[in-house]
Length: 210
View 1 (cartoon, rainbow, N blue to C red):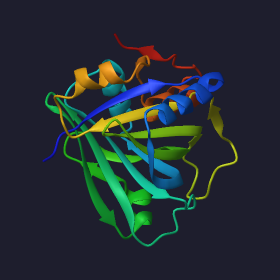
View 2: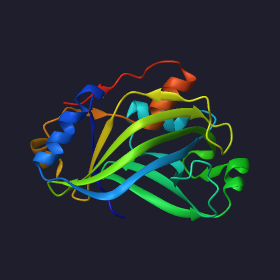
View 3: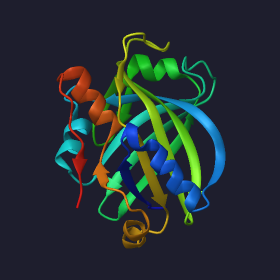
View 4: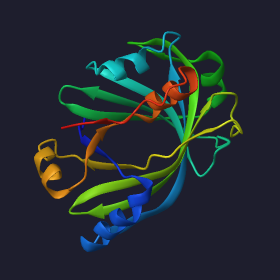
């Protein structure tokens, strides 16, 4: 099991060019072509994963099925990911599933959350960089929709936020990241924000961290 840390930054749309300038100043390298990512998030009937995340409970997890550049989820093999947050840090379990329809119809059984069914779809454009020896991703054009089938929904809610994630396998790197990245850190979950927007009709304001 390999833990990692993830720090998130909110880059306002009007200041995106300043972030690109900062990347150039620090000789950032593009490490992967841009991709459109789409995920189906699962939860139980009580939305326990959502509530545990909002409350900051540990341990907690999120379950999703993800595809890249294929928003209709028609690939024969897809990734099912369980993102787990524990006291030691975060880690991700990834398994290949071959029959998505079974997961959609019968749900995914989790030993902590029971039977989980598809709840929301989240899609966004992601850019990948390496800068100051850290992997950095930039997420734009974030859209949320209720799960209504495998094809991309036309009833989408667009999020104007631009989210940057800094990831490291070194769980002791938190202070170094804070020193090297002069941007305000935030606590942000795309799944939780989707639930807030789609189910509770609230904006789920960005929560800044100290």
